[in-house]
Image (cartoon, one colour):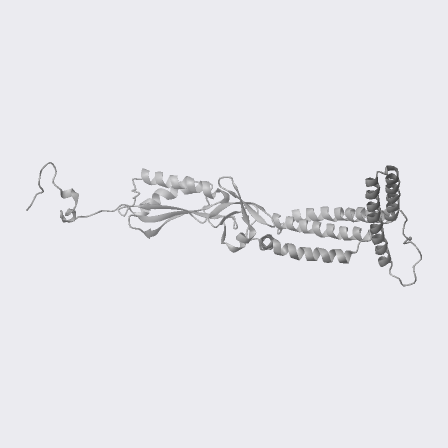
Length: 341
Protein backbone atom coordinates (compact mmCIF):
# COMPACT_ATOMS: atom_id res chain seq x y z
CA UNK A 1 0.00 0.00 0.00
CA UNK A 2 1.53 3.33 -1.08
CA UNK A 3 1.30 6.00 1.65
CA UNK A 4 0.05 9.47 0.77
CA UNK A 5 2.21 12.55 0.91
CA UNK A 6 3.26 13.33 4.48
CA UNK A 7 1.12 16.07 6.14
CA UNK A 8 4.19 17.34 7.99
CA UNK A 9 5.52 19.18 4.91
CA UNK A 10 6.25 22.89 5.27
CA UNK A 11 3.07 24.94 4.80
CA UNK A 12 2.91 28.27 3.03
CA UNK A 13 2.61 31.34 5.25
CA UNK A 14 -0.95 31.97 6.49
CA UNK A 15 -2.31 28.53 5.48
CA UNK A 16 -4.79 26.95 7.96
CA UNK A 17 -3.10 24.00 9.65
CA UNK A 18 -6.45 22.66 10.88
CA UNK A 19 -7.74 22.23 7.33
CA UNK A 20 -4.55 20.43 6.31
CA UNK A 21 -4.70 18.13 9.33
CA UNK A 22 -8.32 17.30 8.63
CA UNK A 23 -7.45 16.55 5.00
CA UNK A 24 -4.71 14.22 6.16
CA UNK A 25 -7.16 12.34 8.34
CA UNK A 26 -9.66 12.09 5.47
CA UNK A 27 -6.93 10.74 3.21
CA UNK A 28 -6.01 8.19 5.85
CA UNK A 29 -9.61 7.04 6.06
CA UNK A 30 -9.76 6.67 2.27
CA UNK A 31 -6.53 4.71 2.28
CA UNK A 32 -7.87 2.42 4.98
CA UNK A 33 -11.05 1.80 2.93
CA UNK A 34 -9.01 0.96 -0.16
CA UNK A 35 -6.74 -1.28 1.88
CA UNK A 36 -9.74 -3.14 3.25
CA UNK A 37 -11.08 -3.72 -0.29
CA UNK A 38 -7.69 -5.01 -1.41
CA UNK A 39 -7.50 -7.30 1.62
CA UNK A 40 -10.92 -8.73 0.80
CA UNK A 41 -9.79 -9.41 -2.80
CA UNK A 42 -6.66 -11.23 -1.57
CA UNK A 43 -8.80 -13.25 0.82
CA UNK A 44 -11.09 -14.43 -1.99
CA UNK A 45 -8.07 -15.28 -4.11
CA UNK A 46 -6.58 -17.34 -1.30
CA UNK A 47 -3.31 -15.35 -1.33
CA UNK A 48 -2.63 -15.70 2.41
CA UNK A 49 0.94 -14.46 2.31
CA UNK A 50 0.02 -11.38 0.31
CA UNK A 51 -2.94 -10.75 2.63
CA UNK A 52 -0.69 -10.89 5.69
CA UNK A 53 1.86 -8.49 4.19
CA UNK A 54 -0.87 -6.13 3.02
CA UNK A 55 -2.57 -5.92 6.41
CA UNK A 56 0.73 -5.54 8.25
CA UNK A 57 1.86 -2.65 6.05
CA UNK A 58 -1.51 -0.93 6.37
CA UNK A 59 -1.59 -1.25 10.15
CA UNK A 60 1.94 0.14 10.49
CA UNK A 61 1.10 3.07 8.25
CA UNK A 62 -2.12 3.97 10.10
CA UNK A 63 -0.54 3.58 13.51
CA UNK A 64 2.27 5.91 12.49
CA UNK A 65 -0.20 8.44 11.08
CA UNK A 66 -2.34 8.54 14.21
CA UNK A 67 0.38 7.98 16.80
CA UNK A 68 1.12 11.65 17.42
CA UNK A 69 -2.52 12.74 17.51
CA UNK A 70 -3.51 9.73 19.58
CA UNK A 71 -0.95 10.61 22.24
CA UNK A 72 -2.16 14.21 22.28
CA UNK A 73 -5.79 13.08 22.60
CA UNK A 74 -4.90 10.66 25.40
CA UNK A 75 -3.00 13.36 27.28
CA UNK A 76 -5.94 15.77 26.92
CA UNK A 77 -8.36 13.08 28.10
CA UNK A 78 -6.34 12.25 31.22
CA UNK A 79 -5.76 15.90 32.11
CA UNK A 80 -9.39 16.97 31.68
CA UNK A 81 -10.71 13.94 33.57
CA UNK A 82 -8.37 14.72 36.47
CA UNK A 83 -9.70 18.29 36.53
CA UNK A 84 -13.26 16.93 36.48
CA UNK A 85 -12.58 14.72 39.52
CA UNK A 86 -10.98 17.61 41.39
CA UNK A 87 -14.05 19.79 40.79
CA UNK A 88 -16.72 17.10 41.24
CA UNK A 89 -15.88 16.00 44.79
CA UNK A 90 -15.98 19.51 46.37
CA UNK A 91 -19.20 20.27 44.46
CA UNK A 92 -20.81 17.08 45.79
CA UNK A 93 -19.79 17.89 49.38
CA UNK A 94 -21.05 21.47 49.07
CA UNK A 95 -24.45 20.29 47.84
CA UNK A 96 -24.69 17.74 50.66
CA UNK A 97 -24.08 20.48 53.24
CA UNK A 98 -26.66 22.81 51.71
CA UNK A 99 -30.01 22.91 53.51
CA UNK A 100 -31.79 24.92 50.80
CA UNK A 101 -31.15 22.41 47.98
CA UNK A 102 -33.21 19.22 48.09
CA UNK A 103 -31.96 15.76 47.22
CA UNK A 104 -33.71 15.75 43.85
CA UNK A 105 -32.21 19.10 42.82
CA UNK A 106 -28.78 17.95 44.03
CA UNK A 107 -29.01 14.90 41.78
CA UNK A 108 -30.08 17.08 38.83
CA UNK A 109 -27.17 19.51 39.31
CA UNK A 110 -24.60 16.71 39.61
CA UNK A 111 -25.93 14.91 36.53
CA UNK A 112 -25.94 18.15 34.53
CA UNK A 113 -22.35 18.85 35.59
CA UNK A 114 -21.27 15.36 34.51
CA UNK A 115 -23.01 15.55 31.12
CA UNK A 116 -21.64 19.01 30.28
CA UNK A 117 -18.13 18.08 31.42
CA UNK A 118 -18.01 14.80 29.49
CA UNK A 119 -19.37 16.50 26.37
CA UNK A 120 -16.62 19.12 26.62
CA UNK A 121 -13.95 16.45 27.16
CA UNK A 122 -15.27 14.50 24.18
CA UNK A 123 -15.12 17.51 21.86
CA UNK A 124 -11.55 18.32 22.93
CA UNK A 125 -10.40 14.73 22.39
CA UNK A 126 -12.06 14.51 18.97
CA UNK A 127 -10.54 17.84 18.00
CA UNK A 128 -7.10 16.48 18.91
CA UNK A 129 -7.78 13.51 16.63
CA UNK A 130 -8.56 15.88 13.75
CA UNK A 131 -12.33 15.39 13.61
CA UNK A 132 -14.35 18.33 12.29
CA UNK A 133 -16.21 19.35 15.47
CA UNK A 134 -18.49 21.87 13.73
CA UNK A 135 -19.91 19.20 11.43
CA UNK A 136 -20.26 16.78 14.34
CA UNK A 137 -22.13 19.28 16.52
CA UNK A 138 -24.41 20.17 13.60
CA UNK A 139 -25.27 16.51 13.12
CA UNK A 140 -25.95 16.08 16.82
CA UNK A 141 -28.23 19.13 16.73
CA UNK A 142 -30.29 17.74 13.85
CA UNK A 143 -30.49 14.35 15.54
CA UNK A 144 -31.60 16.07 18.74
CA UNK A 145 -34.46 17.84 16.95
CA UNK A 146 -35.65 14.57 15.41
CA UNK A 147 -35.38 12.79 18.76
CA UNK A 148 -37.29 15.62 20.44
CA UNK A 149 -40.28 15.14 18.14
CA UNK A 150 -40.12 11.36 18.55
CA UNK A 151 -39.90 11.51 22.35
CA UNK A 152 -42.18 14.46 23.06
CA UNK A 153 -43.71 12.85 26.16
CA UNK A 154 -40.30 12.15 27.66
CA UNK A 155 -39.25 15.73 26.95
CA UNK A 156 -42.39 17.07 28.65
CA UNK A 157 -41.68 14.88 31.69
CA UNK A 158 -38.08 16.14 31.75
CA UNK A 159 -39.18 19.79 31.77
CA UNK A 160 -41.82 19.00 34.40
CA UNK A 161 -39.15 17.25 36.49
CA UNK A 162 -36.94 20.33 36.40
CA UNK A 163 -39.94 22.43 37.43
CA UNK A 164 -40.68 20.15 40.39
CA UNK A 165 -37.05 20.17 41.54
CA UNK A 166 -36.72 23.95 41.29
CA UNK A 167 -40.16 24.95 42.60
CA UNK A 168 -40.02 22.30 45.38
CA UNK A 169 -43.77 21.79 46.10
CA UNK A 170 -42.66 18.59 47.86
CA UNK A 171 -39.44 16.78 48.63
CA UNK A 172 -38.13 13.30 49.26
CA UNK A 173 -39.66 11.99 52.49
CA UNK A 174 -42.80 14.17 52.34
CA UNK A 175 -46.25 12.62 52.59
CA UNK A 176 -48.41 13.84 49.72
CA UNK A 177 -51.75 13.11 48.08
CA UNK A 178 -52.06 13.22 44.29
CA UNK A 179 -55.33 12.37 42.55
CA UNK A 180 -56.59 10.24 45.49
CA UNK A 181 -53.19 8.52 45.77
CA UNK A 182 -51.53 8.97 49.17
CA UNK A 183 -48.00 8.04 50.15
CA UNK A 184 -44.44 9.10 50.94
CA UNK A 185 -42.19 10.55 48.24
CA UNK A 186 -39.47 7.94 47.77
CA UNK A 187 -37.53 9.46 44.86
CA UNK A 188 -37.75 12.35 42.40
CA UNK A 189 -36.11 11.90 38.99
CA UNK A 190 -36.18 13.99 35.84
CA UNK A 191 -38.84 11.73 34.34
CA UNK A 192 -41.04 10.62 37.23
CA UNK A 193 -41.79 10.77 40.94
CA UNK A 194 -41.88 7.55 42.95
CA UNK A 195 -44.46 7.35 45.73
CA UNK A 196 -44.41 4.70 48.47
CA UNK A 197 -48.02 3.94 49.45
CA UNK A 198 -49.30 2.84 52.86
CA UNK A 199 -49.25 -0.73 51.49
CA UNK A 200 -45.49 -0.34 50.90
CA UNK A 201 -45.96 -0.36 47.14
CA UNK A 202 -44.00 1.92 44.82
CA UNK A 203 -46.18 4.02 42.52
CA UNK A 204 -44.42 5.71 39.59
CA UNK A 205 -46.12 8.96 38.54
CA UNK A 206 -45.00 10.96 35.46
CA UNK A 207 -43.79 14.43 36.38
CA UNK A 208 -46.28 16.00 33.97
CA UNK A 209 -49.02 14.62 36.21
CA UNK A 210 -47.31 16.09 39.28
CA UNK A 211 -47.56 19.63 37.89
CA UNK A 212 -51.02 19.29 36.31
CA UNK A 213 -52.86 17.60 39.18
CA UNK A 214 -53.58 19.06 42.61
CA UNK A 215 -50.89 17.98 45.07
CA UNK A 216 -51.67 18.01 48.81
CA UNK A 217 -48.48 18.11 50.90
CA UNK A 218 -49.22 16.73 54.37
CA UNK A 219 -45.77 17.35 55.87
CA UNK A 220 -44.70 20.73 54.46
CA UNK A 221 -45.22 22.50 57.81
CA UNK A 222 -44.00 19.61 59.98
CA UNK A 223 -47.33 19.41 61.86
CA UNK A 224 -50.62 17.95 60.67
CA UNK A 225 -54.20 18.34 61.88
CA UNK A 226 -56.12 15.09 61.98
CA UNK A 227 -59.94 15.05 61.82
CA UNK A 228 -61.84 12.01 63.08
CA UNK A 229 -65.51 12.17 61.98
CA UNK A 230 -68.30 10.62 64.04
CA UNK A 231 -72.00 11.10 64.69
CA UNK A 232 -74.28 11.03 67.73
CA UNK A 233 -78.03 10.63 68.03
CA UNK A 234 -80.25 13.71 68.23
CA UNK A 235 -81.22 12.82 71.78
CA UNK A 236 -77.57 13.07 72.91
CA UNK A 237 -75.81 16.27 73.94
CA UNK A 238 -72.68 17.33 72.00
CA UNK A 239 -71.00 18.64 75.16
CA UNK A 240 -71.28 15.19 76.76
CA UNK A 241 -69.59 13.62 73.73
CA UNK A 242 -66.91 16.32 73.93
CA UNK A 243 -66.27 15.64 77.63
CA UNK A 244 -65.92 11.92 76.93
CA UNK A 245 -63.53 12.22 73.97
CA UNK A 246 -61.11 15.04 74.84
CA UNK A 247 -59.39 13.20 77.73
CA UNK A 248 -58.27 10.35 75.43
CA UNK A 249 -56.30 12.76 73.20
CA UNK A 250 -54.96 15.03 75.95
CA UNK A 251 -53.02 12.14 77.50
CA UNK A 252 -51.37 11.11 74.21
CA UNK A 253 -47.77 12.38 73.83
CA UNK A 254 -48.00 12.04 70.05
CA UNK A 255 -50.58 14.84 69.98
CA UNK A 256 -49.74 18.53 70.43
CA UNK A 257 -51.32 20.39 73.34
CA UNK A 258 -51.07 23.71 71.48
CA UNK A 259 -53.24 24.12 69.45
CA UNK A 260 -55.46 22.23 71.85
CA UNK A 261 -57.66 19.32 70.68
CA UNK A 262 -61.32 20.10 70.06
CA UNK A 263 -64.58 18.32 69.24
CA UNK A 264 -66.95 20.40 67.12
CA UNK A 265 -70.38 19.98 65.54
CA UNK A 266 -70.14 20.18 61.75
CA UNK A 267 -73.55 19.15 60.40
CA UNK A 268 -77.15 18.30 61.31
CA UNK A 269 -77.66 15.19 59.20
CA UNK A 270 -80.86 13.19 58.58
CA UNK A 271 -80.08 10.57 61.20
CA UNK A 272 -77.31 12.08 63.32
CA UNK A 273 -75.54 15.13 64.63
CA UNK A 274 -72.18 14.97 62.85
CA UNK A 275 -69.05 15.98 64.76
CA UNK A 276 -65.27 16.05 64.29
CA UNK A 277 -62.56 15.25 66.81
CA UNK A 278 -59.65 17.51 65.82
CA UNK A 279 -56.05 17.41 67.03
CA UNK A 280 -52.54 18.09 65.72
CA UNK A 281 -49.87 15.41 65.30
CA UNK A 282 -46.22 15.91 66.22
CA UNK A 283 -45.15 13.54 63.45
CA UNK A 284 -47.14 13.88 60.20
CA UNK A 285 -45.88 10.48 59.04
CA UNK A 286 -48.19 8.90 61.65
CA UNK A 287 -51.35 10.23 59.97
CA UNK A 288 -52.69 6.93 58.63
CA UNK A 289 -52.06 4.69 61.69
CA UNK A 290 -53.33 7.42 64.04
CA UNK A 291 -56.51 7.81 61.99
CA UNK A 292 -57.19 4.08 62.22
CA UNK A 293 -56.40 4.01 65.93
CA UNK A 294 -58.58 6.96 66.93
CA UNK A 295 -61.49 5.93 64.76
CA UNK A 296 -61.71 2.82 66.90
CA UNK A 297 -61.07 4.75 70.13
CA UNK A 298 -63.90 7.19 69.40
CA UNK A 299 -66.33 4.34 68.85
CA UNK A 300 -65.32 2.54 72.06
CA UNK A 301 -65.30 5.74 74.16
CA UNK A 302 -68.80 6.77 73.05
CA UNK A 303 -70.05 3.25 73.70
CA UNK A 304 -68.57 3.23 77.23
CA UNK A 305 -70.21 6.62 77.90
CA UNK A 306 -73.63 5.28 76.75
CA UNK A 307 -73.76 7.83 73.94
CA UNK A 308 -75.71 6.44 71.01
CA UNK A 309 -74.03 6.28 67.61
CA UNK A 310 -76.96 6.21 65.14
CA UNK A 311 -77.09 4.59 61.76
CA UNK A 312 -79.20 5.70 58.78
CA UNK A 313 -82.72 4.23 58.82
CA UNK A 314 -86.11 5.02 57.31
CA UNK A 315 -89.66 4.65 58.67
CA UNK A 316 -92.52 3.72 56.34
CA UNK A 317 -96.09 4.70 57.33
CA UNK A 318 -99.08 3.09 55.54
CA UNK A 319 -102.70 4.32 55.60
CA UNK A 320 -104.47 1.19 56.96
CA UNK A 321 -105.08 -1.44 54.26
CA UNK A 322 -105.65 0.88 51.33
CA UNK A 323 -101.98 0.70 50.41
CA UNK A 324 -102.29 -3.10 49.90
CA UNK A 325 -105.36 -3.04 47.66
CA UNK A 326 -104.72 -4.84 44.38
CA UNK A 327 -101.74 -6.78 45.77
CA UNK A 328 -101.32 -10.42 46.84
CA UNK A 329 -101.03 -9.37 50.48
CA UNK A 330 -104.84 -9.19 50.80
CA UNK A 331 -105.56 -12.26 48.66
CA UNK A 332 -107.60 -15.00 50.45
CA UNK A 333 -105.73 -18.08 51.67
CA UNK A 334 -107.13 -21.60 52.33
CA UNK A 335 -110.54 -20.66 51.02
CA UNK A 336 -110.92 -17.69 53.34
CA UNK A 337 -112.18 -14.38 52.06
CA UNK A 338 -110.72 -11.03 52.98
CA UNK A 339 -112.58 -9.18 55.61
CA UNK A 340 -115.05 -6.57 54.41
CA UNK A 341 -116.65 -3.70 56.19
